[in-house]
Length: 330
Picture 1: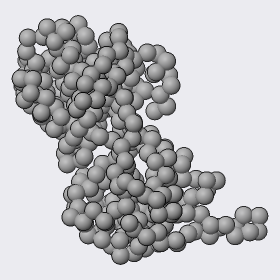
Picture 2: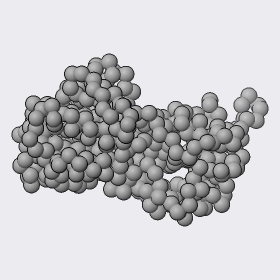
Picture 3: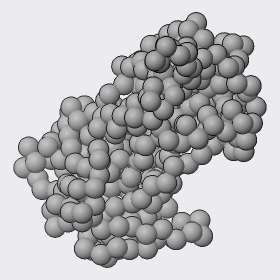
Picture 4: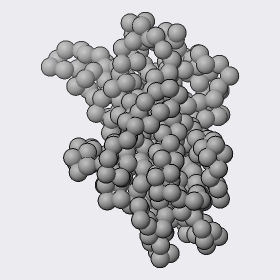
C-alpha cells in the first residue's frame, strides 16, 4: 500500500490556521455530457467546506496534457493525484515519478496498463465489458421477440484505446460471434456527436442494409440518429434502424423513453464520493480492494421490465419512465 505523504495546504479561518487536503485532478476533457457530470461529481465532493483543496486540470483529450498535469501536481506536492486516463498505455514513467514523491494515485473511469500495479493505489469505475454484455443480451432478446431474420450491425466506437471503448467493443464482437450477427463496420466516433454524425453518414452510404447501430456513448447516438434521419431513414422500434447506446444521460434516457434509442446502458459518473472513501481508507490503512466498480443499470424502450442472466447472475432491465428521466441530474 502506498503511504500517505501528509502534505497539506494551510489556510486561515477566523484568524486560526486550518489544513485542507490537496487533490490534483486531471480530467480527460469535456467531450460528452457524461464527462461533464463526472467533473461535477469531483467538484461537489472536494470543496473547502468539506476539507479539500481541489486543483482541476482539463486535458482536452490529450495524454501529453495529462502527463504535464500530473508532473505539475508532483511539483506542487499535492496530497493525492486523481486522474481519468485518456488511453490505457503510456503511464509508467510519470506514475513512477509520483510513487517516488510518495503521492498516492487514484485512477477513475478508465484503466491504465502498467507493468507495476503498485504505481497506483486504487481504480474506481465501470465494468465496461459487462455494460456491453448486458446491452447485447437485451438486443438478442429483442431480435428473437421481433423475429428479425438477420442482424446487420455497425459499431461507432469510442476513443480508441480507452478502457470504455475496449470493453464495450469487445462485448459486441463476442456477442456478434456468439449470435451470428453481421458486424459490418467499426469506426471511432471519438465519443462526440459531430464525429459520430460524420461516421454514420459514411456508413449509410457504404451499407444499405444496416438495421442496428451500436454507439459507445449517448453523444455518439445523438449524432447517429441525426445522420440516419437526414438520410431519410427512421429509428426506434418499428423503424428502419435500432440504436444501442451507453451512458444513460438525461437526454439519452429521454430519447429512450421516446423510442429513438432501443437500449441504453448506464455508465455511472458519480465517482467523487467513491474517491473520497478511498482517501479515507488510505489515511486509516484500511484499503481492502484495489479495484472498485460503481453500481449501474440497463434501460430499455419497450413497455415492460425484463430479466436477463449473465454469468449466473440475474439483472433487471428497466423500462424508462418519465419519472426516471426527471430524476436524472445529468
